[in-house]
Length: 331
Image (cartoon, rainbow, N blue to C red; front, side, top):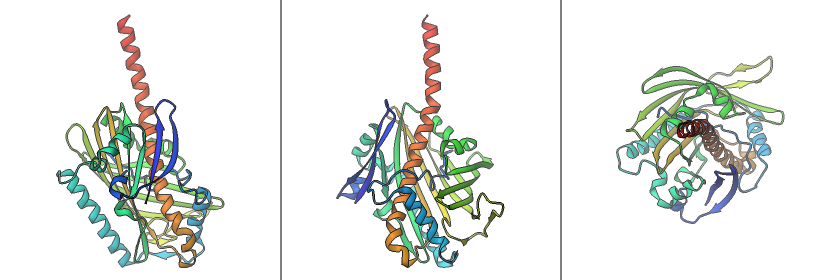
């Protein structure tokens, strides 16, 4: 089994990606909060195994639906999705009631130590992603990152700043807008765009987000797509939204869980990102299957990295200002 590990130097702020092989998958493991854009992320980064350039991977994944008949979401596919999401919610409940550690990385002490020295840890949930279901594929990855010197509210502020998602998560997020807000719930619309060569995939979603704060140092959210519409001819005069559950099938459903905990001089960020797409045509399966495994992982990696970068930019001006005030007072 392979785990993606990203080394981060806080002083140089450079990322180095490498592949790490582990035989013990348990050891590999490794709010007002949400990351509804996470399933897309910026996927231009290279897969760790060097199997194919990212542009080529994206091209084939976008081209596969385009070169076959449009897909229609079937009842048995929806049923499989509901069962998978239900299992994810049960796991989240177990983490909130203390049956298992709140954070996935706390299941192995070595994981938190690796995060604190700058690594980003990723793994497929249950050791397999994508998972074939009748008429579709379910992609389920979990990942974690640590932001030193950050406070819980710093991370919450970034993840709730939808007006700036197009800056934080460019170029994938073309639009993000908060539609409704209550103390423990949000409704957000997102437009995500993926381009490769002459092929463009665009999807607009509405997401309902449940939010919970668990004391002063913990928070989590669960984001569920309630509307997913693929956009045909994006960027052209003929651009139009396709009916829900019809079309190429790039993305049919999304569900995301985000967990935050402030301790050890910073904030741990964990994200589990689940999405469902159409199945891979048989004639292209030999080529696309490895790429279908690569791109969701890279999307999660990019989202965690981009979130950390945005939080660091948020806290650095505040830290510099505090230091200046302290120096002035000392004079």
